[in-house]
Image 1 (cartoon, rainbow, N blue to C red):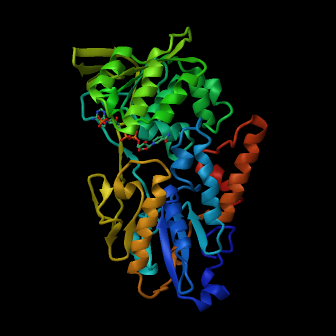
Image 2: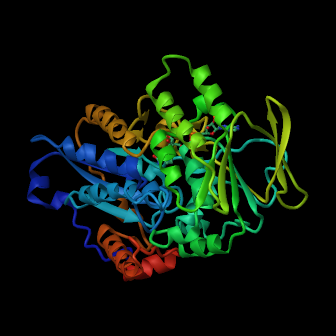
Image 3: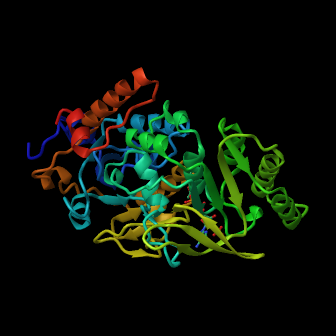
Length: 442
Ligand code: NAP
C-alpha cells in the first residue's frame, strides 16, 4: 500500500458485476451534502448497461461538510440527513478518500485524466465582506469563521472570538445570521446536550455578552431568514427576543394585500414576536431593520457600528461584530471561477468537469435543495458519458498521505458518538486533525 489507510480499498471493477458491465469512474471533490446527493443520483442512474465507481475526496479527515461544520448545534434534527449520507457511502461502489486535499495532494488535471468525470462539490467557504471602514479590527469577523469555530472545524479552532464586551452585533438577515445571533444570545448551558465544540461551550460560558443585535439593511418584508427559524425564537427559555411592533406593522402595510406565501409567513411570525410581552431575562436578542452598516468604530478593537437609517445615523456600541452576508467559493487550480462561483452551464464546466451545490449556484437554499440540483447535473453528466476510460484512480497518486477511508471514518464516528453518550450529547467532536486520525487507528 502506498498510503496509510485501514480500508482494503476493494475496487468495484474487481467484482463480478464490474467485470460484466461498463464501469464509469467518477470522482467527487468535497464530502458535503451536494457531493453526497450527486453520488446518490449516480447510484440511482445505474442501469443494466452501466455502473459507476464513485470516489469521494475530502480535505478534512471527516466527511459531511456543512452538516458537520455549518448546521447550528442546537438544530440536531437537520443533522439527521447524515444517515442518508452514510447509506450512500455504504454501497460497494463508493469509496471515501478523506484527509486528501485536491489542489495540494492531487490536482484537478490528474483527476480529470483518471476519471470519466470529476464533480466539484466544494461549496463556498469564504465569507463576503462589507467593504466598510473598520472591518479588519479585532472583534470583527465573518460567520464563515465563527460558525466553524463553534462547530469544531479543525482549521478554525484558533479563531479569535472576543466575547468580553456586553454587546454583540450580527450583520445580515439570513438564516446564518439567525444561527449566529441565537448561539450568542442563548444561555450557554443550553448547549451542553449538543455537539458544540468543547472550546466554544467554555468560551460562551465565560462570555460577558448579554445583548445581541441582529441588523437587516432592509425592512422585515425583505428578510432572508425563514419562518421556522423565527418561530423557534420565543421558545428560547432564557432570552428576551425583541422586535419593534411598529417596524413589523409598517412592513405588513408595505407588503400589501397579497404578499408571497413566505413573506406572509415571516411577517406573521414576526408580529407574534413583536406582540410578546417583554420578560425579565438578562439576555436579549433585538432585531434592527433598515439599518445599513456604514462604519465599524474602534482603534485596535471593535467599539461600535455606525448605521445609516431612515432617521439618520445611529451608533450601536459593541465589542463584537459578526457579518453573515453570504459566501463565495474558494478558488482551485484548473477550475474557472467568476463572481464567487464556478463558471458553469447547468453544472457543466469544461470537458469532463462538473459542479454541484453552492460552488455551482451560489450560497442559497437549504440542504435538501442540493438533492434535486445535484440530480439534475448528474442527468446531464450521464448524457455526456460515452464509453468508460478507466485510466486509473486517485490511489496511484497518493504516496505519503494518511487517507481516511469510509471504514476509518466509521471508527471516528462511532468513537465520537460513544464519547458523547455519557454526557447526554449526540457526539463529542474531536477537533485536531491528529486526534481525529488517531481515533481511526491510523
Ligand atoms: P442569505 O439567506 O442570502 O442572507 C444574506 C443576508 O445578508 C441578507 O439578509 C442580505 O440582505 C444580507 N446582506 C448581503 N449583503 C449585505 C450588505 N452588504 N450589508 C448588509 N447586509 C447584507 O444567506 P445566508 O444567511 O448566508 O444563508 C445561505 C443559505 O443557507 C440560505 O438559503 C439559508 O436559508 C440557508 N440556511 C438555512 C438554515 C436553516 O435551514 N436553518 C440555516 C443556515 C443557512 P439583502 O436581502 O438586503 O441583500
